[in-house]
Image (cartoon, rainbow, N blue to C red; front, side, top):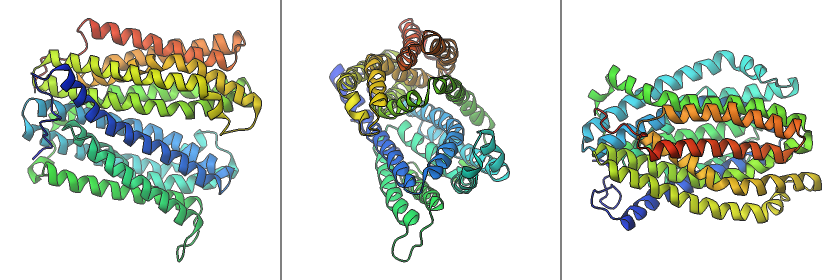
Length: 455
């Protein structure tokens, strides 16, 4: 039986107060899950830094390549989340089970493909990143261990997304917290050695990640089997359902890839500004990432609730859930902006004692403070559009925003006008403002969702 709490699933007669409760019920576990994932990244970097800077570089380059893999896996996760939510909203639980298992099949295929690419092209992929010879050996070792079993990454995304589509954001949160804590313990034991366990250095960090992912995948699979049931009949490949997943998810993957490629290009512009400025930009970005946790949590809630409401043929409620989720996100992100404006420099001082870098971090985060409400609109409305099966429009707007606004204005403001890091972050703000305006206008014109999509 599907996760089907009457306190969570949207009802046609729910008032605004009840809707706000449902949004918070779904959003907060996603926020907490994102928080623990971010904390894990910091702890991983801290442990690896004790091995040496070449190890940090090796992990950083590997993660840059893995980000491309993850973009594909995430796109499949979004697609199955939306389809499951719509089927649940329409009362079609068997169809939700079916497409969920079809997504698992596709996740296995994609995971095996990317694992094979890693196995055969590890060195070539790393050399494409311009990696230095003294880092290459460690990077090859780390990359092979974490990325050959890419199927574990793809399965975790899909398992979690199926559960979220049913309205269960708590279970992925609990399992994420558990495996993150396990990863931290394994990091310490395998990197540095503990009792009878020998010190394995960077290989230990890689094995810790893989073991944690394996445990997470098994835990999620066991829970899925318990909650929704997995049947032999649903394993047979359904070409239509596979195509439904691919066509809905492809624009999401393309959007993330566009952002990654654009990021590589404008990072090159920032490097031109000097080592201190690039370091300040990276640190400011590491601090700002915590604000994404909030917006992404509410985007997850909005996507599920919009999908379920549209599945129940209840467009008015879908739009109200979208509005309320966005307003809540704006309110909380405004508070985050306040904290960044007044305490950004202080937070930056925990990362470096260089006064010039700290000053630039403060400038970046004070500008970013005004971007936070706009960022909430962009991320949450993107989730709303995805929930409405309209994944193409956010992709188009992101492409134009990154390539036609952000990159151009970083060059004009930061380099040509010599505004430095202030020019970089103003350009980032202009990109987000552009996307927020177009997403909001499209949403306001009631041309954002496929209302009568055949289920």
